[in-house]
Length: 228
Image (cartoon, rainbow, N blue to C red; front, top):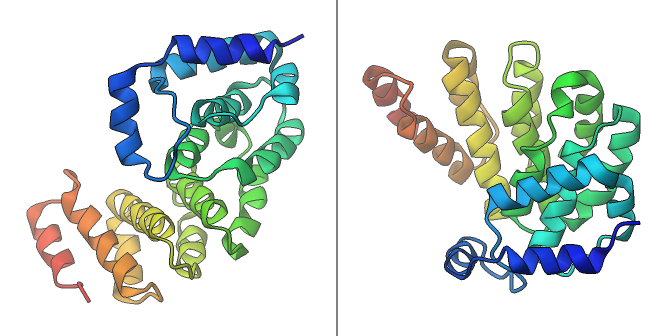
């Protein structure tokens, strides 16, 4: 049986105070950060996923940022088919309360590459949500796992329909759109010329395109003219 006390003790043993101070500045409002660096957290998650991931998830608490993120990572590393994993993903989404947990969790869900259509269908309701981090989770999943031609038009349409005032939602949408543009500039340009995004999100997408090292200067100059 998984000993959650021992796991919590291990997290505190791995704590790095300078890192805790650093990450606390990047995730404002979170007061339960221990300060475990991501490589160490991922190593622990992989070990738990290999040993007894179901047992861990059954007893895991939400006592710290790291313990919540550890749960998400274990779900991502768990060896199971999509039908078993999706309920765990659904149960975890309400625990996402900041961008760091959201993006760390999404970045570990490589099962989306093995079951792209099943995961796509699971994600679709996220874009009808009013929940900040359910929306951000959906957008981040698109930019990590669905930047290919088969999903491009549908993905842009989903991003275009998002209406939410939270900064972290807007930034995820902008990040996703810039990622699609860098990958498919000719097919994404019509979207930049005609979309329903609010001005902040639209302009942030342009900014992220200009900051990318991939587009040439001529393209970046053209992108600048699209600012609202």
